[in-house]
Image (tube, rainbow, N blue to C red):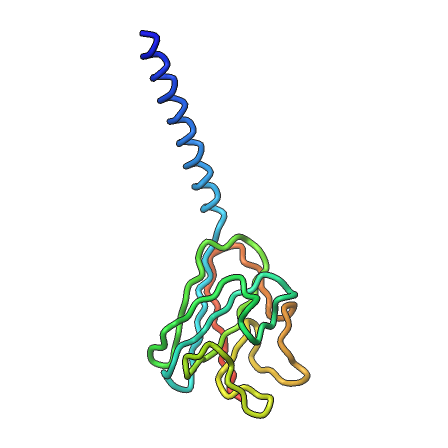
Length: 154
C-alpha cells in the first residue's frame, strides 16, 4: 500500500512536469514567426540563391557571409528562388542575398563590383550614395511575413 501511494505520487509528479514542459514549448512556439524571402527576376537559373538573415546592426552588411543569424540556400526555378525562415522571435531583421551562379558561396567580383547578383531587404538599387546598412535594410517582424527582395546586377 505504501509503495502504491509513492508510485501514484511519482506518476502524478512526472505527469505534471511533462505537462508544464509541453506548455512552455507551446507558448514559446506561439511567439515565433516565419519569414518567406523571395528573389525573382534572376538573370538566369544557374547556381543557387543564398539568403542570409541578420538580427544585429554590427553584422550587416556581411560580404563574406560569416556574421549571419540564419542562412538558407534556395534552388532556382524559372528565374525565381524562395526560402522560408521559421521559428523567428519578434524583432528587427535584415536580409542579404546572393545569386551564387557558380555555387562557391562567395561573391564573385570584377573590378570592385560584384559580377553576381546581390540584394538587400528594402533596397531597389545600390551605389556609392546608397550603400547597404542595417538601419535602412531592417524591418520589424511581429507576424508571419513574405518579403520580395530585388536582385541587383552591376
